[in-house]
Amino acid sequence: MTKSTQITQPLREWMDVFMHRSMRGWNQFAKSTGLSMPQFSILMQLHYKGPCGMSEISERFDVSAAAASQLVDKLVQAGHIERTEDPSDRRAKLLKLSTNGAKLVDDGIQERYRWMDELASKFSAAEQTKVSEALGLLTEAARKLDQK
Image (tube, rainbow, N blue to C red; front, side, top):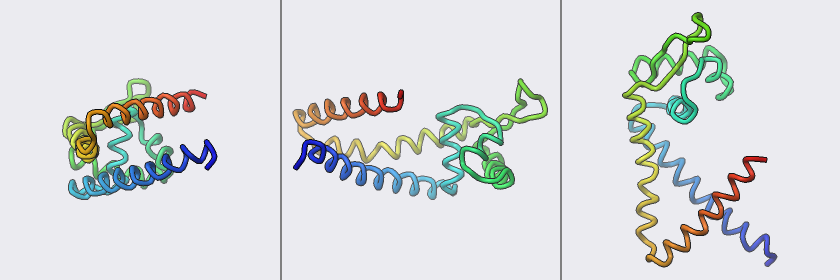
C-alpha cells in the first residue's frame, strides 16, 4: 500500500460514513419540522451567511426566481424568515432568520451533533486524544486548502 493510499482510503471510508449519517440526520430533522430539504437549506444559508436578497437565494440554490420566491414565501408564512427593507436599495427586500427560524436551525445543529457525542463516548480517553489530534490536523489542512 502506498503512503498516499494508506491515508486516503480510511479518509474516504470515514467521509462516506460521516456524510451518510450527517445527511440522514438533516433529512430526518427537516421532515420532523414539516420543511423540505430546500427550505431547510435556505434557513441554514441564512444562519451561516447572514441576511441576503431573493436573487442570492435563487443563485446559490440554482433555481428560478419564481421557485426561490415560492420557497421563501412558505418560510415567511411559517414564521421562520423575516423580510426587511434593504438599506442600500429601498425597492429590494432582505431576508433574515426570525427568532423562531434561528431556534429551529440551532435545534437542527444540536440534533446533527448528537450522534457525534454518542460516537465520542465509545472511545477511551487515550483514543479520544488521538482522534482529537488527528481531526485537528485534518481541519487545519482543509482550511489551508480553502485559502488557496
